[in-house]
Length: 98
Image 1 (tube, rainbow, N blue to C red):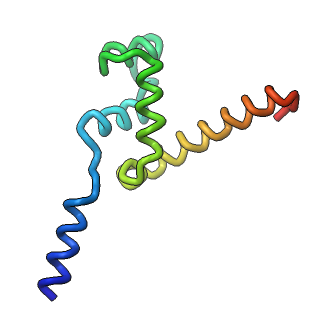
Image 2 (spheres, rainbow, N blue to C red; image 1 turned 180 degrees about the vertical axis):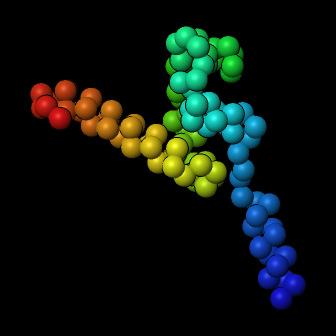
């Protein structure tokens, strides 16, 4: 039984966890509308990165299983919104209405 517990402990340590910045990004996405002004300005002030870089980091973050584990509702919503935008872009390129 001790060997099984030790193995589970090793697996938990080996699993990647969210960094402090990743947790802050998820928290910001959950409540960005509370910040005054444009979202891009808030991103620049809070994370000191361009909005383009922020969205690159965010998209990579929501693909990670540990982000899904940390905040499943938010991550699923962001994934759903991203998929909808991708469908709309594809439809526009092909001349369809979605």
